[in-house]
Picture 1: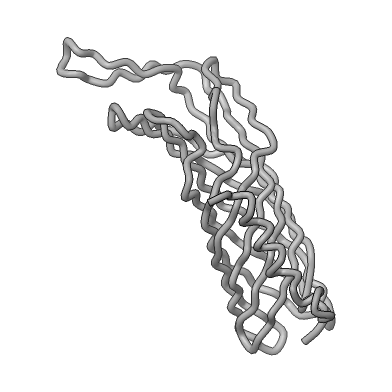
Picture 2: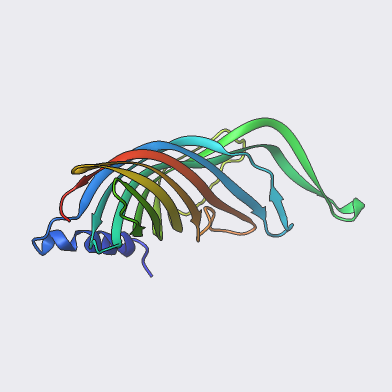
Length: 218
């Protein structure tokens, strides 16, 4: 399967109402902060590196369509910073001591990955008088924009396109045609950052954003 077909398919779904002469149900912007971390696993050693989270920018434009009584679909086009930091410089195996793994520590360094993310999300909401709590769930595709690291051993190969899953929840406040909201999303990857054994790196991220939604139709 060509992964580049996937975001085109998602865009077609989101904008089908426009093609059919119908306006989307809503659109808007959101921005905030991301707290990201990574799992670094050496499969040949069955060893996972200790890493610490990094903070970054999370911002997105979104369009909502196919709005029903409680369900709708939402397309998110986002800018996200991901990565991790660690003090581990290298790992060695002491074969003279029953293959004991020795972790060599040094100065802390940060690795940061910047992505453009496209998500198609199912949205379930509870329409109260002024408050609208909601939940989000759906697939996501990340496109690598930039990779920076302070490590002496940068990654030479990695996946430029990563398929993942997004789970989110939020709370909106209605102001006529405008809604203000706060939202939390958790994102995990189904495809690793690296594409070769023995090192497997997977992203995970929590984003905290605030934004506005412009209601177009009901």
